Image 1 (cartoon, rainbow, N blue to C red):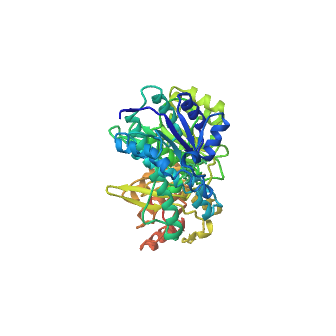
Image 2 (image 1 turned 90 degrees about the vertical axis):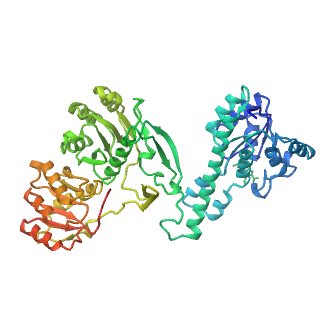
Image 3 (image 1 turned 90 degrees about the horizontal axis):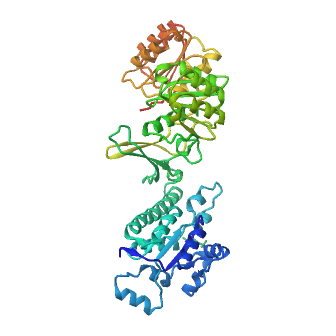
Length: 533
Ligand SMILES: NC(=O)c1ncn([C@@H]2O[C@H](COP(=O)(O)O)[C@@H](O)[C@H]2O)c1NC=O
């Protein structure tokens, strides 16, 4: 059947968003409404004529709602093939009327298990049985029935039903969505119970069921010939996010209309993750091609930005800025005054006057994308780190490993000063966010030199030293993994680095320690590594 006219609809929804309006519109088109307890009440309260499900089934809703719609009068009405006279004769013989539209969304299992105090009993009661059965019945028989599981589809359903009827094209789309809905629902239930009863100790499950919803199509991927989209993770499915301050939870504060690109989103994530390392002081990070070209702290967020930019003013041009405090007028004035073209900014909040200033300040301001991510605090640890390889997925926990001062081992003869120590910890938090082999030089809680993504560590040191230039003397250096030879530290020593932090653990550690002693460098081992690829 190309088009179907809806004469009778069964509405049974937990999420009652838009259901009254839908029912009103259906009733106005002469559709008979049949509904279950709570839904029927909502419709009756809105003055609509509704037939209760128990009238249709001849049974009361029973067992605390466990059995309401599981009845041949419901499923016969949904599943009868309209193209088969024998099906129609069978339902007629049993006094079953056809149901042309099923509107169902399921018990809120995801929300229930997200509650911190959820009990097993609660979780079990929130497993919908009758709902998925109807969804699957209606989806199977989409040749004659429309199935709607998402309130955002109500408008399109109504617009079609107003004309020739609901098209096969739409019914097929709704059918696919319905099966995706029940599949995601059951997959969540399975993961939840596997975690509790099958592999309670396992950090990584035997089967990784991830569920990501596309929130937007992107203009293109890493390159213009690649098709791309942004998918938000369902936190309960292990993709991370949840209530954490993350780019998946960002809202827009500009009205440029310009989309955030694939590379922008990747860099925004990197920038945000870096400033999350520093919940205690105004901090700004500027990212280019997934690496920080600047990160600094200041008395104010404006000062932090100015200092972050100073590390590499050339690379900061066209960068992504993340800050961990409100975007204020003083910062907007600095950005406009320095004419530091930025692609995107992410901040926990924005001052309206600051938005006006930065958007209207320079030509590029009109295209500036401002993202708001509230509650920026320390680094998060939920979810997984996923890296796809062709034919598989590498999965690990996130690189969450806070390091306290007491875990450090001083290896050099000279102890670091208190200021060197806190500078080393600042550098250590920065180096974690730089691609390996990563070297960072910092001074005064600001990045001064970066060596990123090199295949040998000594070259990373040379790059950082070259960038630091006159800021080299008196700076400290962090290395994301151990120095295999003392050659890297020697380059740093000659540039005037006074303290080094690194994991340690090389067979040649003794040579590096001797080199540091020779140059009076304070050398600190963390025992922790932060590779990043
Ligand atoms: N038991 C059943 O036969 C049954 N039929 C429909 N439901 C669900 O009951 C909910 C709607 O209930 P109410 O209209 O009472 O608020 C929907 O989420 C629907 O999927 C059922 N509930 C659970 O399985």
